Image 1 (tube, helix red, strand yellow):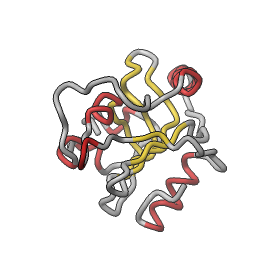
Image 2 (spheres, one colour):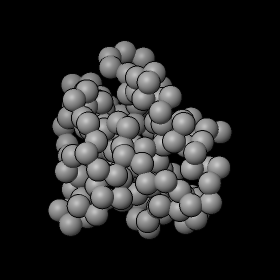
Image 3 (cartoon, one colour):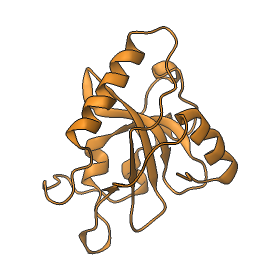
Image 4 (cartoon, helix red, strand yellow):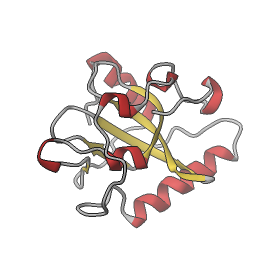
Length: 151
């Protein structure tokens, strides 16, 4: 997560967005190669940007259903993303769980997620079978009770 003011997104809650970068939790490589599965399909990217435009133009944000679920195959890290910043499409908003026991709403850079490499060169993957069944706030509430994202 990248450091942002608390009011950077009206649905955000305190936690990992306080400056502890995602890179501190997982090892990063400086320049990811574009191989393997893309994190977002064109349709998912379009929907995420549309959601970001909607929320940036409103006084009260919409509580969207997550558009995409990303996960780390070698740990329990999971991201449920609802929006991309229209001015900076590398910046996503959603429910982020680094498998530390406290999932939080916040922002994350897709370039950081893409740069992560695990054992044997594994990468963060998109759950191709994920279909949201509730809003992001509902996932966040349930995840905080369980201590991990259950989606």
